Length: 230
Image (cartoon, rainbow, N blue to C red; front, side, top):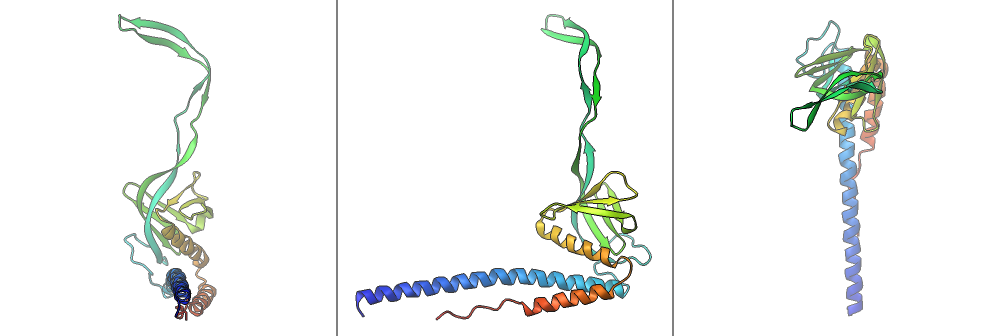
């Protein structure tokens, strides 16, 4: 074999190895995502089955009400509305009195103008654990506890990364909600919250059938390990 043939063979072998490594990397990424999706699907399914059978899908420390069953729990932060300090906008009048030989002056008198209230903003005020049941969302923190009952539910908002949620309930004027440190936990909460809202009325069969179909579909779509490239 001449030099040219050897170089050509070495180049082809390099391409083969690169292609094999790329295929293996793609498979690993797809398998990891599939495993996460499949695990989540199974947990959603088991949560509905547990509620149907009158049991809890996860162990929680909070006291559950009659007919209430826990389906998910995780770490979260409590988000509530806060307001900056207000102040007067306008003129002031008064006199300025020197303080000895310090170069400082003390102003006495009055201020006039319009009082402008502080601006409202959302802030994380506590950290703790959130529990989802088939009846409500409950936050238990180091300083505060909150609950958002589905019987008072008006809606919810979430940011694009699914890490911040604001809940609207009829028994509370100010909007409050939850924040999650990671996209993965926020994504899980999103799916289980949707599930909880679906089964709050005790209708399980439709949700069970849909989840079983989803899990079966995921099973059929499990990534296959790439064959060795010749």
